[in-house]
Amino acid sequence: MKTAMITRRKLLSTIAGGATLAFSPACLANSKRPLSKLSFLVASDTHLGYKNSTSAEKRWIQAAAELKSATGDLVLHLGDIVDGGREEQYAVYLREREKIGKPVYEIPGNHDPLKLFRKHIRKQVDVTVDHEWLKLLLVSNARTDSHDGFLTDEQLLWIESECVAAAKQKRYVILCLHVPVHSNRHPDRGWYVKPANGQGELYAIIKRHKQHIVAMLHGHFHNGIRGWQDEDGIHEICMPSVLYNLDRSLEKQNATGYNPLEFRPGYTKVTIDEGWMMLDYKPLGADVSINKKCEFGRG
Image 1 (cartoon, helix red, strand yellow):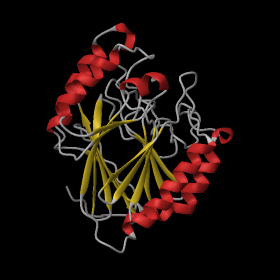
Image 2: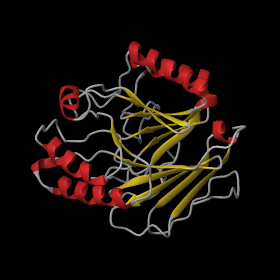
Image 3: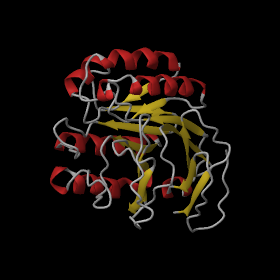
């Protein structure tokens, strides 16, 4: 899919069927070298075992089947694999994960105890995934005792070192953290990395390396696609949940940022091509040939 820039203002049309956002990160728009087209898939907040019912398992079975057939080089899962640390549900997750047939990379959410994540998913929690010209930084910033996010000094040093490495390798960076960094207060949920827990330090790193940072991706919110672009022009985007999403009427309340009016359970296809980054919100079982569309000008 290719999207031409029509206007520098955000366009929003309300048409049933899904949601497509297209924007041009400054680092890609200003790139002086051709970059190959990339696409990958993003799932989040499967919450297997939710309310001790099989509803979440059924949604994950459906999502995994659709992820298998969807176009994308790899899959990211942005946390809350299981609900409330239900250890037996990791086997359910991995059973369907194996059927996807693509590389899948997870980060833990606040429902995923680190001990269980290391046991069932990956021993090394914070990792880098290099894919062609893109570097994905998978960062664990959630704790089971809080909805807020937390970054340690060691993690911040690691993130900066990976940004330096990306510049030397001529790669661009996408940061993946379960809890958003962006300050969000009422009418939003108010869950983010607070100043005392590394927010300012991370934004300082982003400012130093913004010429190489494409975006930050998060789960956690269950609000469909919820995003902002006011910190050095870097898009910070909460992705939809596979299990459920809620309409908090953010657009009606003139909340900062964007929140397209699509809230069905689903996943997201991310396509980066010709300086544009496109997010196709795919509701489970729905035809997305007709979409809502938000478009952002370059820069």
